[in-house]
Length: 289
Image (cartoon, rainbow, N blue to C red):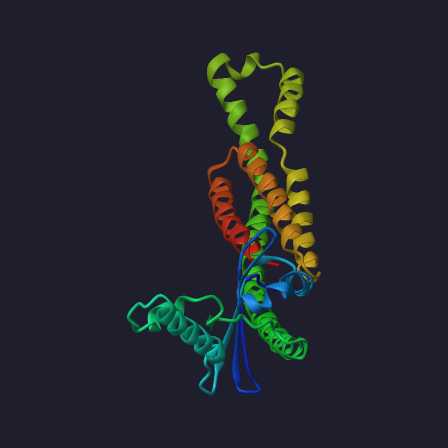
């Protein structure tokens, strides 16, 4: 089955007083290039998540974002009131002992060690399990998106392959006439130069056979048809992107050889059309998983 490497998936859920939103998107890449946009509280799960995504999505430039929004007011900063009072009492006592006027020590107290704490809470194991469930839902949504895109790519592949095959069939029907035309043209040119009566027919036939063999494209036509059929059968395989890309290179090699050997204006036009279709085929194959 053809799958695109491009896709997007999203999942949302509620965990306690937190609203969780997971977004994951994928673009073309030769390997699994995975990046995260997640809270530092989940960094210790990053390797586990990376392995899971690589297994499920295989390839692509993949970006995963986890957004967590609290549905109730939270105080991210904690103040140690008892410690602050203790500092205030100690400073007041110090003023009396040193016989210094008492001041407002509020700013100094806030700067004292451990009065203000901004604690980073580690993710709870159970909380992570629920978040991971939503991540898998987003990955499944992305995979469904890839399959849908893959159907469009498959349809485009079939159109390009049929166009190339139709051009190949036209070349095959023109090929026999091409060879005969070349023979007659060569014979006429020689006759015009040295005269028809001076042509050694045996020698002429030998040289003509040697020349025509160099222009023969039968093997290239057969190989091109084989590569087109191979491309079609490979489309049914899973994760066939790289393989399809290699096959397009072989298709291009045969088309180029036909063009260089053809020595015929009409066949050259068909070769140009096949090259145009092949380029579109290559562009699409680069997007296949």
